[in-house]
Image (cartoon, rainbow, N blue to C red):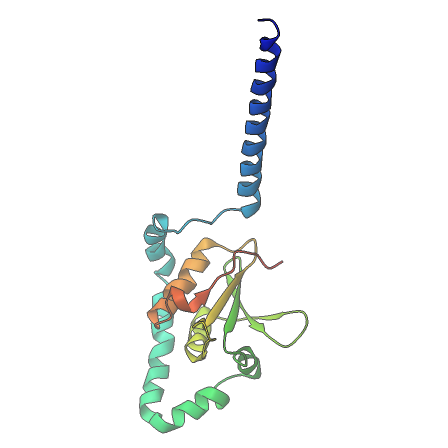
Length: 182
């Protein structure tokens, strides 16, 4: 009987050691993935009205004159929006079919493609929404790519999603990578 006891202790020790390794691996995965992996079904609905109380006023005041101009110039509107109404930076941002936006804290930046190192220019959310409406989209239907820095605020993410959904760009047209931009 004395010879069976060390064997029992060895298997118990091995099982405990394996359990510790599995728990440590799970904790490491959770730590390296970072926060914000949920679906935002619970708290997002409660926080959206607070984050969007100011944005609709800004968006409606900016888009109402643009809509009024469109009605007055019907056929001339499309060429003006494509070339004349856009700054060179905005034209460059729309040169690809997907508009890339970077969220830095509560600020929104527009990505200008073409260089090896991405160049970002500050932009107002209302203008980015107008540009997103002009984006053609890629073969997967993605019209807007929203990149984030590590200090990006969740309220800014919710705000841009809400504003894009108001113009008909749903979650299927928005790509938000899990990785952060340094």
